[in-house]
Image (cartoon, rainbow, N blue to C red; front, side, top):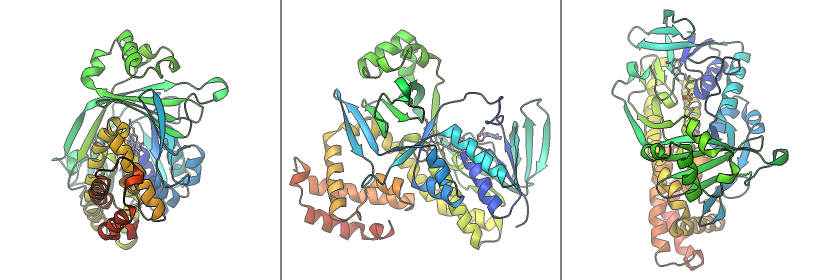
Length: 443
Ligand SMILES: Cc1cc2nc3c(=O)[nH]c(=O)nc-3n(C[C@H](O)[C@H](O)[C@H](O)COP(=O)(O)OP(=O)(O)OC[C@H]3O[C@@H](n4cnc5c(N)ncnc54)[C@H](O)[C@@H]3O)c2cc1C
């Protein structure tokens, strides 16, 4: 296993993977299509900020980087739901020690690239695009984004970390499915108030659920918030003109309109993003492997895409510790992770409906209150599906199945209850222990 490793893509997952491989003693070369994002040639790009949670933080911790990342992040303790003219806070975790972290994707990527280079074992070649890959001969064709010059390289051990539109995937899993959501997204910056103060609650993920669409906002270190509007492509077309966009906000998000100067013009010029779910099999062919979004891009509504890609690195590293052959280790990762990736892909799609529609629904609120009380009575042993995904490293497929059982229990114990006080908690606890015992043990 002394061969140098080649990674295509220096996004968050490719650069973290480079760190893991360097720590195992490998020399690593990374080919990245874009210019160095720390340099003057890097474009502004999207201002996406991400929620980093337990799975991602654990992988970063393995590389000694979790503290560094948390210094650059803002804790979000729950969701602030803006509906019916008011704002209501719903905690994410069991208490204030459980939260998710808002972090700029670009900033995180810059940190990882820098740390990877610092190891002395990782070389990153920027502005080199993977054009095609031949898994049988392990030959990659690269094209320079500067002058168009092409070259072929031999990649004995190759990783495709080249994102949702992966070029490497075509060679490894040509039958992949790529489902584009019929909703797109646009980002807007809600600027800081005087002296860098936050104009909305700082330590929350804000949601304006409007049934068939929604707006969310995540805090940034400088006091601004990045708002993301999720809307059908059709409606985006209807509000393409600045005046139409402002009228739309006046009608649906009246509290946000005065906080974003030139909102109509800003929205008109913001790029329209697409969201894709990628499912493929296998992820590996011989000594070539897909990781991160290249293998399993998901829609962003569970805040898990990057966290899942980081967890790929954790799982692969554990397999490599016991399996000396790359091909067997890669096949092992593909088999182990595929059911988990499918589960989080489905959960992420479901969560879109939950965020834009259900969070303001009385039954949803009642269920969350009952779950909070159950967790309190069971001294934290009960975790709802969101918490299993976000605050534990229980395999995603287990969290998925546990969620189904939890829904069944909640439906039974909440039947006829007008408030959380009317629920029979002894019965609820018994049902939880009977039906969820094994999940509780592993969480
Ligand atoms: C609006 C939005 C919100 C999100 N929120 C969250 C969140 O809260 N939490 C979370 O965990 N995830 C979130 N995600 C998902 C997250 O951004 C992705 O899962 C993560 O960026 C995947 O990392 P990656 O390195 O696998 O792929 P990418 O980030 O796509 O990186 C791929 C890299 O490969 C390079 N590349 C592409 N093609 C080639 C090629 N042919 N040759 C060489 N290089 C190439 C690209 O330039 C890029 O640098 C969100 C995504 C979106 C769109």
